[in-house]
Length: 181
Image (cartoon, rainbow, N blue to C red; front, top):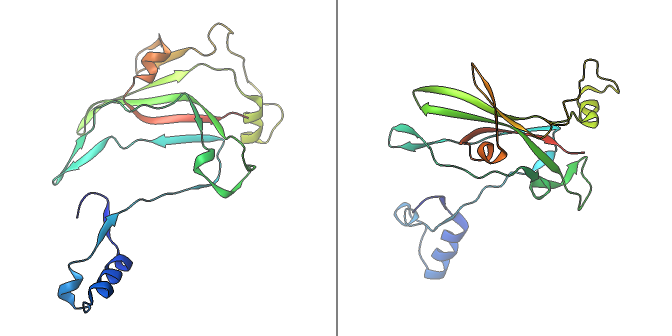
């Protein structure tokens, strides 16, 4: 037995029949283990997608924080993860999402501090209409054209302009994507 392996009752039964063994409890312990894989598919795509990355692993009876970097894309196509009957998606259609926020944790499992990287972007009227159901959203302001696409690092006491590469090098804990219509 090993990681991600499960007892395969069908495989074990075929082996027993092939070898002419009886189904005793003692023989049941000598089952065939096979690699396991679990797949979940999306049945309806959301306007906003939030991905939570597992940043810990179990070591015996305790949990340890995983501090290594995990790559994540600026643009994500969810189409390969949608079921064949996915609502609001046509066959062969791309389901694109753009990254606009990253939450990072510094510290240990026992304590630390959360900061965020946020992309300054032009509000998507189509996305806002989809979320609110309204054609006009009061108070919606367009950002400076100079700042659109710029990343900022946000903490309790500061907001600092950073490069896209710095944002993408974050040890992400949460990723925020918005549907690109």
